[in-house]
Length: 89
Length: 451
Image 1 (cartoon, helix red, strand yellow):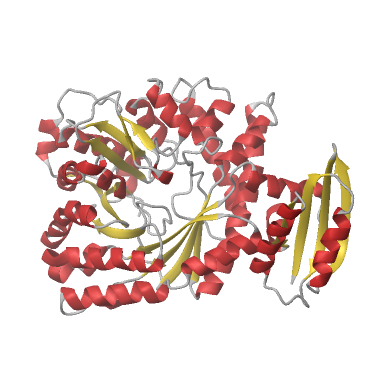
Image 2 (cartoon, chains in turn orange, green):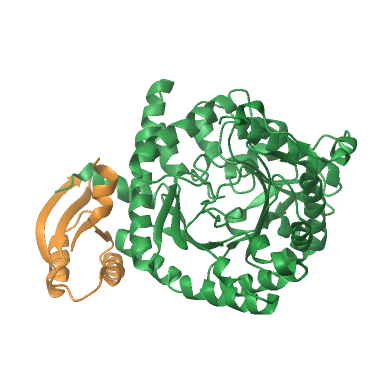
């Protein structure tokens, strides 16, 4: 199963390192990554593969939200289908 | 890979614009539960609902977290209970109690279907059932009731209309300690639909299969935001924007509906394309209309704006879902919409204008508080007016009205949570008594003869 991780918040050093470390610890493989700064705001979207991840998606969503709070960023992980459904005809 | 715009748009819709799945409702047929005695039937009803819907809360919570879209309500609708209670209508309350207990056991806030369909005629057992409604609503917490008193095909059963005016008054009286809260759980319909996922009017029609999942989407805030972004657009462009937005919202609903049905072992029923407001600011249908260019909802132009909004939502939604049903349109419940509440409080919105609005949008006079001394005949006449709009225009209309005990115009009643607060609105004081007393059937309109 694939999911989309989004990270949004005030830019600072080490965000990608923290997020990718967090994902690696859980056996989550990053398939695609795209990051930019929008008006001082850090925005990153990752497409990840959860095949080797032991945690279920809903627990992972909770863990991501918690991790986001620690680094003062908004971190979401969502099933990729929600974006396919809403933005592709 | 997805582009930034799309992904961030979805996240913003949820975080800032109140996008949510308003309800995942499981429709359950209770027909197999009917057996010899009321007590045994009640036991079977309780067991069936608890078994079929046992995972509804768990599964919807999982889906909400996995897809990152809040699912606000989890609910159950059942076969109109008047059918289940027919052999022992004098003990209908036992079925009502069993349903309420099942709702508590499941941890859902409302269960709909303490309902009767009497649009053409009312059998003795149905009348007996309807007479039980006020007490049952007073004695239960989570049970919702509805009665269909008319249809485009059959006309309007004015005997039932008269009776429902009286039942609403009685319900208000015996729930007076809670400002007539019982009436917030009682809907009177014309052209009721069998697959409506929204409360208080949901029931599981007899034409439906055993267990289905119906989903109601929402997102007035998302539509309002989309309109805010194009302040100079003309109305055709506005309609296009609303269509595109409705498409996205509905696709989210369709995805959740299919997945919920799969995980709960039920059939996917329909997606209801409704804009359902909540009392939260920024989640209001009234504010969409004001964003379209009205100083206040209720002023001249309101009906036209609402007609366009309602139609554009449907056009966008229809393409996004493989099965559309339910009520599908913009809801205008007064107490549940901050824009409506404020307009009613400053006198900018009256019942007559709301009635006109119901001719072009979903449902009808919804969550309206009127003075406590409003007579049963006046309430029946309000129901008859709404039913006439529904019958002639081949649409669903409904009345959910609260004659707030001991309250007068200028007061307000508060029900809390999603039910919000309702300012008491004035009604006409001239009597409709003689008209309502006549009873009988208003015949179906000529255009119902389509065969």
